[in-house]
View: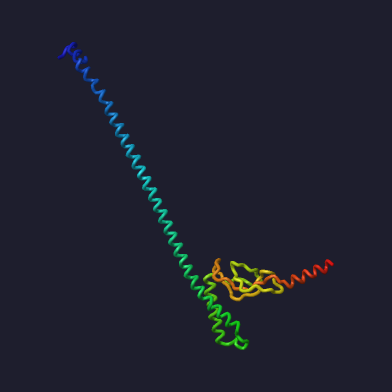
Length: 209
């Protein structure tokens, strides 16, 4: 059994023990510095990867936008090609309609009710139905003022009862394809009536005297 003095000697720290305890303290600073360096490297790598991801996303968005625009452009070009093809077919039908109109206008009175006439009128109605279903409509000319966007002047004539620039008559019927001119109307246009103007000036002078 140990005495009190022996126990006291064991509990009291020796010089060797006192020298060993603080030895671990200086090693903590390099470990912290190494951890901070690792965190900085991870943060730098994370920022680099984030920048690359943002660049990839931006490139993807640009590619998606270009693909969408290309698809829209292709659809628009296809629609324009179909519209152009349809317009060409309709333009080729118009002379047939013109010929039928002229033929019916030249019929003698005793031929108007003939069976063959009824058959051709049925064909004419079918043609007109096809044109209407495609959005084709005749251009109005009767009583209208001359519009170079819709009409082509065949002649300019003095005509009583018409104002200058007013359409006198229609030589060839024009047609619209929806909001576009398919074929302009060929028309006769009234010009200034010099005889009427001269008479008006003479009457005005007589009234003054």
